[in-house]
Image (cartoon, rainbow, N blue to C red; front, side):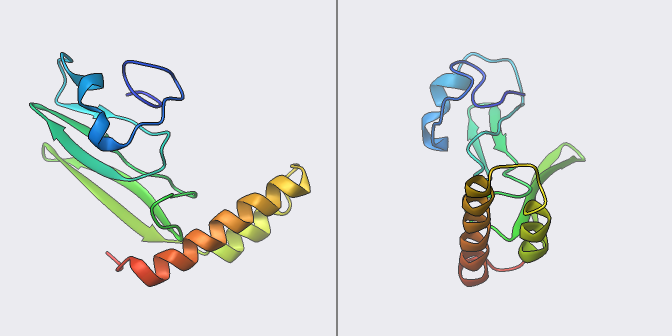
Length: 122
């Protein structure tokens, strides 16, 4: 498990198609990564790289919490819808600067609108 990539900068932001050299030589069936907030699985030889996505700020379509489940020696990506407006209301009570809350609310709402249009329910 690693935040961004198993070899490299903690905040390295690489698209999935550029992960191969970061996992080359690792003795692992699965490498779990985050940071990009983009859900996906990609195999590089015997190693599968898994990004479960984001529970609240998915960058590939919001309004759904993304996660991964490993069961019976198989990794599966899942999504479930959540109430974006309720999340925004709770966010407004957080002890953050208003411009930060407004920025996060805009991302949540835009991503949620995108998900309604482009993502089928699973």
